[in-house]
Length: 408
Ligand code: ZN
Ligand code: ZN
Image (cartoon, rainbow, N blue to C red; front, side, top):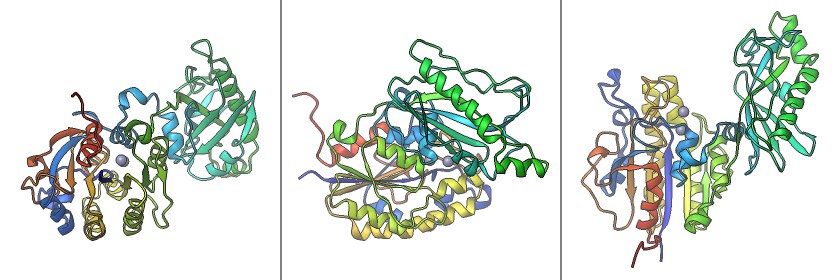
């Protein structure tokens, strides 16, 4: 009987030594008896999720963890940003990143961020969402602050178009033009969207209130960076695995969906610091009853990394560790569990870095390598050595007795 696989990603957990934690990483500084017990009875290593020296985004990192080569399948951030704001993205959809901006009478861009608008963008976005032009379905959704995403769905779309966004203030808004034959329809729809944004946002109540308050109105949407969603092979097609996922963040959920995973909705899984880790892991254990592979993403450590909050990050590790008690108690005997991360988010960097992440694999017959704690330095001495993210799933599939032999 082949075994089952549970992959748990602690988003952004990897770090560097922190002076006010006594030169320990937040992971090392945290009390983590469950993680360390799993390390003691498993195999450890380090992982370059994409490649040494490459700083992964959460999107490219998860593509690699699910066995896709991000250098081949990642053609532009647009479709992944669309997933990040909760839009459903299908193969062939074209998405563009957008700014809420301020334009003057002669179509000159006065402010590419509309006075750094933060409020009211959801209402403005609703005015531009859900219509059709020349058979193309158009969706628009607000992102954080002045950002938004434009998603086009239709046959015959192409990402090969120029940007209406002039990328500099004081310049005029550009026409979207096809860069190759076959991109004409896409260009026409993008131009129609920009015209529509000017028409519908001009007298929008949100903008009237902004002008009254002396703020710059968000009276145009400027799209840029068109990208197309590639058709990715599902885990079923590629490895014959049925799969489920538990994640709180829209971007990660979206990548799980395009990889063919069933994304479970778990009450309390917020993708924030308040997320209910226990509920997520209980849902994952339940899903193992019917899936060959279950994936879990826990976002909280990454948030503390971006905030530069070392002590908060160590506290998140302690919460993760308590939740890991459920895994130690409830894991079916035939299950191989991998605990790792999608990238490091060092508190001194406040962003993702290329530092390799710790990796732990636990399961029946796994070579115990003598590593007794789960952290960046101890794992460097482990028997798994140093892997790439794309290699993790094949390693787990082999351990689980599901790999095809290469050769006779
Ligand atoms: Zn991440
Ligand atoms: Zn991050």
